[in-house]
Image 1: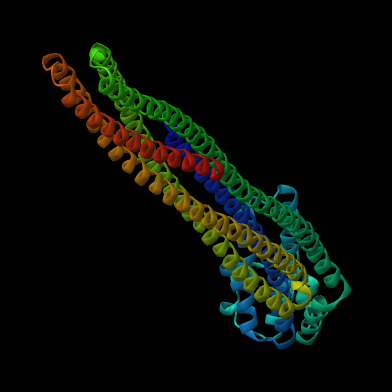
Image 2: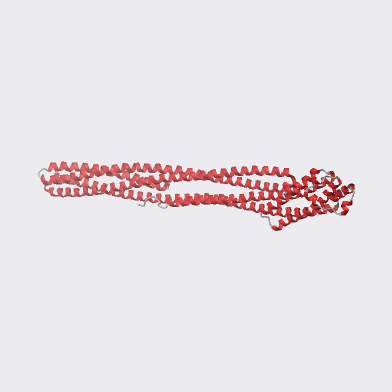
Length: 513
């Protein structure tokens, strides 16, 4: 009989678990990388926007300080202007940072052009400052180095202090200055438009990749669930097929034993009839003693065959009980494996809960981002659109997590039904083991009784040869043999009924399988 065990299952199960863990790790890493790309794209977008504004603000700052000095003659504005040029150097810092961000040279050239035009405008602003300083008769030691080194034309020097002041103010507010200023701001605006457009495209691409990564992760999760279910179903089908084959084997063996016991029962009945006929013949004719002796010899042979049959039946019952014990062990192992699968499904449920919690946190962050974007006004409108799209993705994530939760719940419920069915099968197998044990004891008694009877017939045959003169004693002995044969027939009948019960239980178990 084939043993109910799959030697390749543990190795395959380990490989299957490693494969699932690898898929989960790959999906998590891939999703992490795509989310990281979104964060990097957002960070770069914000920084580029900030740097563009910083370049424009630096140019406006210089213009404002130069104009304030031209109007008020306040030395503080003069200091502020040249501190920005010589110390703070915001325009140079912006260019250096953009190079570090690896902005394309074509876009960097726009800011370089803006800075070059700004440097050209510095000359005009320096001329205006020196005219103001001369008009205000400020001591030369207070002149900034660049202003001190600047040389006015002879026409400028010949102007009166009042004319110098008016000339300085006119230079800072005339149409030419505005045109020069526009030449500075146009490249900055073009740079901001180009860079921010490219950054927005990077964000869109990163967001698309994140959606793709999320879809992959959901697909892998669904694949893991489906694979786990298919693996479980495949394993259960193999177990059911094995249980069915073993139940058929037990039923077949039990049927064969029942047939043999029926033959033994019939032989015992025939033997009792023969003994009765012998006793009647011995009462009628003593001269037929030789026939009685021959019948006694046949009876001894019959008991020997009965002994052999019972011994064979006893061994068969032992084997059947071994199979039942092995079946019980396998059913317990199946229950443990189903419990293990239930634990894995619980872990998947925990992961789906974490995904849902993470989606809630991202939704809160997107809401905060939308609030901040609305505060920023027109400048935050693009970021507000991104926040809305993120919230849509979060809603989809929540729905997917909820679907995963429902699928896991159905799997857990099916596992509980399976565990209940297995426990019921274990109970049936335990009952079958109890009946097998009782049959084993019954066959032990039959085996012992048949051995005793066999020895008794041998002794009776010997006594018949030695005591030919005592016909009455022989008749009495034959009566005893007849009674013992009836007892054997009853014992065999009981054994046959026990095996029929085993056969019935095996068939019921086959139906359950």
